[in-house]
Image (tube, rainbow, N blue to C red; front, side, top):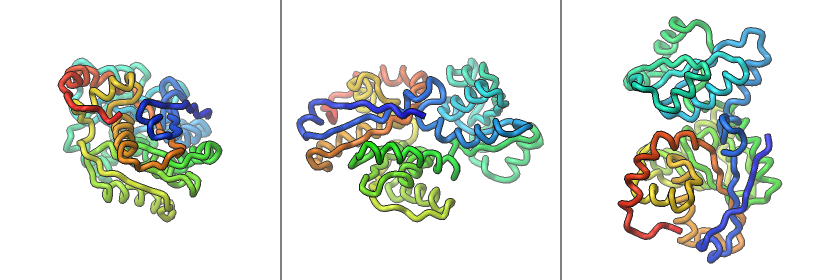
Length: 305
């Protein structure tokens, strides 16, 4: 798959004499965009090579980028899909779930308590009893084969000769893949999209690599996650508008905010070549745009630009 890249600059970047590019994974496919294609590619190839084409079942919230991409992939390739959705069925369905259902995904809503038990064998067995045979894809598409698929992006990083790469962290599969596939002289900076400590985020990455018997490579900085997952404050809302709605509000916008603060604190030497990974997720904007519009005018302080 072609990985688009584009130069990026603003007054702060020019002042600090940095060479910045955005890796536009969000432009790689209109529906299976961003990191989702890399995560789903192994299971899609396996399903297409099979004679039976078992349904693909996975998990997510009401605005899940993963379920949205999986539903379209199933529609496009003729593979049945099942989405186990956290929470009660909204009435009416939001745009994400409407898309998924229109693409043929069978939506199965479970309580938040049940969802927390989604990896328990009893819960899985109940799903088999209800839906019959299926291939289970972990939440977010996060699996060892997804990590290995994301590691393939490392070949692009090697050709482009970046000094630093910034990536958001959700389930950690994409960041773990980048960590595994990046050149040794490239430093990865990981920004959590949920409220966890840097040590907790590092442990997530370590667990992914341990599942493949891989050691933790050098050249890694993990930042603290300062906001709960899905939360948007006034500063982020204002920053989203300031950057012309380029980033998705839940993952990459937090990464960009952290990047700006690192630039302001002179973390990067002059002349550094830096890549910002846009991991997609723009369909999710539909679920939080009204909140952004309400919060943005409330921000009074200077933006980290």
